[in-house]
Image 1 (cartoon, rainbow, N blue to C red):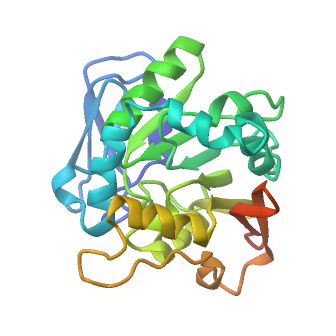
Image 2 (image 1 turned 180 degrees about the vertical axis):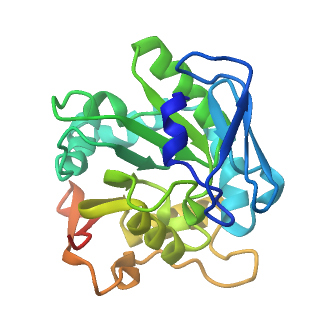
Length: 270
């Protein structure tokens, strides 16, 4: 993690500024901890990744999917196979990433996984500093190995989308691809993406279509949440605050005349 990133971070519980305690004095922090003076909580930094959650803290679908993605991290080839029938992975990912307003500013990817979007993101000459978070420690470990091999500077965080560990108005672009269909609290996640985006920023959210999501839920046994309620796999446009601008939803990942995904995008008012 870059030492300069500290100015963006806040306690995910009370949003107070954090102090850094580590053993190195250069521009990066590989080992150390972040301390919140208000609620007196410490958050470890291990292998350059700040840990704002532990598996025991996760609840509902978040807990189940964190375990699933830890296991799924060993099968990275699946995504490539999934996108193959839709024109290939490049087409599927750039169909979403091309909607971002990249201007050299800070970019936040919520649910970065193993970093599959990064090669296409860094192809843009206007891509700035990149930050990514996920609830899967195994996925983040793979992502860190990937970015280290490529020589990219990407700060990674183990954290929940529903309680982002960043100060308000920290990012020029915020996006999420895949996963929100099964978030425990979708509206809180969307509100958090809005909170950390700067005024005038574009926010882009994409996932499988409702039909595909229902099939995945049945296949994985996630048709109902831990509370016995049905999982809502609808496009979450109704959860976006009506104060947002340029709200639109498009079908994506078309195959055999059907869209297998959706892309929801909107802009935070300037």
